Image (cartoon, rainbow, N blue to C red; front, side):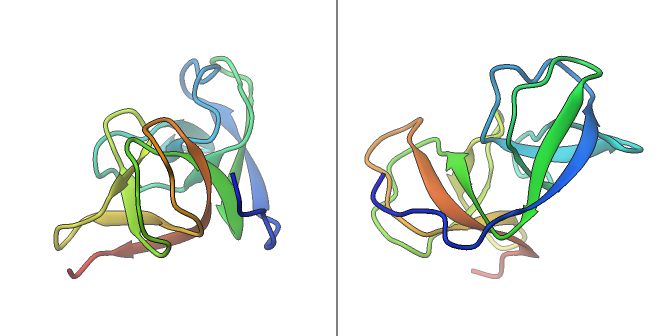
Length: 126
């Protein structure tokens, strides 16, 4: 990882709506009041999970600023916009109406890399 986090994230605490122990640095969404779960394909996200909580435990979520994000493939360009894939990983947002959750601050070399991103939430118009 070449880039470093320069804009400290704003962190918010929720309850884990499912077992998230293997899903640190993936997109999550509000699945119920004060509760987050792993985001699925093109789901509107609330942020990126920062810890590894089990069901019902405290889930710490970055909602603004920068964070690490696990990506599903190699991205050659800085500034790519990402949505959630089926497993909460960053996936290239390349279709109008994609639910964007982040923008890359560095390129990734392979699937499952953790890269620095800016949290962004908007609907793509590509």
